[in-house]
Length: 63
Image (cartoon, rainbow, N blue to C red):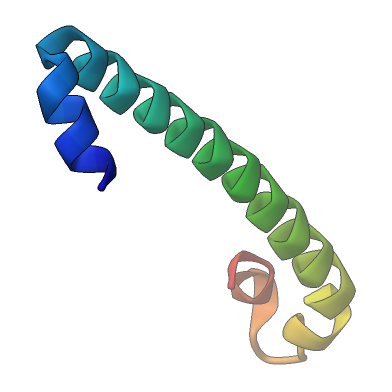
């Protein structure tokens, strides 16, 4: 239904709508990426003692 209305209005509104959706999607992706980065950092910090097992050396910190 939305596509039919946009095709009736014309190309500029369609492109504007597409740009708006793209911007919202990019902002959401950035926020999700930052949240994932924070979660991964906290998980790595909590698991650092478990990852750095004897015999692994410094490789455990980069897992």
